[in-house]
Image 1 (cartoon, helix red, strand yellow):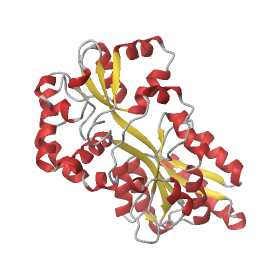
Image 2 (cartoon, rainbow, N blue to C red):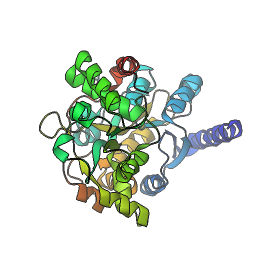
Image 3 (cartoon, rainbow, N blue to C red):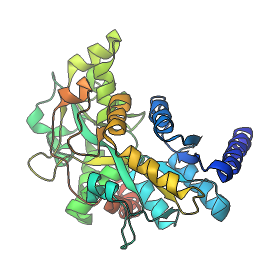
Amino acid sequence: MLLRSIIATAILAAGTTASVAQNQVLNLYSARHYPTDEALYSNFTKATGIKVNRVDGDDAGTIARLKSEGAASPADVILLVDAARLWRAENDGLFQPVKSAVLEQRIPANLRGKDDGKGSQWFGFSTRARVIVYNKQNVQPQDVETYEALADPKNKGKLCTRSGSHPYNVSLFGSLLEHHGEAKTEALLKGYVANQARQPVGGDTDQIKAVASGECGVAISNSYYVARLMKSSKPEDIDVMKKVAVIWPNQNTTGTHVNIAGAGVARHAPHREAAVKFLEYLSSDDAQRYFAEGNNETPAVKGVKTGNPALDALGPFKAEVIDVSAVGRNQQKVQQLLDRAGYK
């Protein structure tokens, strides 16, 4: 790990030196680990001549590294995959505001960070919905069509989720807190615990497979995990998807919760102009299609045709419209509610 960090730092230092001569480099700190993103970055280089030097890490590690590097950081763009982490980075002063007519026109206001008049701190470029997956044999869809219904006693012994403290769930519960307030959200979380078929374990794909096997009746998953299984040619994955169905939750009320992948210009970016160009590129139709086709995410820009048959098969849905920054503001309170509810 130390060696990799040293190598990455050396690469970035070399890139920074080269940029003095030609200003054709961009240092990207990324929490995305999807191989398909390579084409996204190489196309940016082809279009602009700007080379992308990427340093990978998870959200928390990336934020910790930036704070450690301080003003000496070579990072130009910070790319994170959770609204709460973007909010944290914003509040830690890791971004600088960006005023861009392109970004303001293409990225919806509720998918952007704080704007104090000088521009937004960060922008969401793709979304992933938190959907409900149920066993077609054992569960009636009308019993599990909302996040709130999963806490109903009629679903006792049926619910499976990954850890309540995982960022995907913290974001969902943060949105429920925004909609319902503290008392009702705590009651919902206690209902989730009471209805668990087993202790939380594994990732979202594990929850879907547990529903198919009958271990669980219903689960919560990010939409792109469902789409991956839908596109799989493996017989076992095809069998899983024959046994389950998917619901866009809360279509008649608040709408389905969505989380985001987003990016902003680093506070001490040595190549600010290149960084802004990169953000604007991520909002382009071509880049938006890469998010959809490469990782089954929904474009943040409205009206982009994805060319992804799995997303098309899942169909359109009503998404909740709240300021995603609220999810970040609520995360500490959510963790307190999880602890009180005994949600592991």
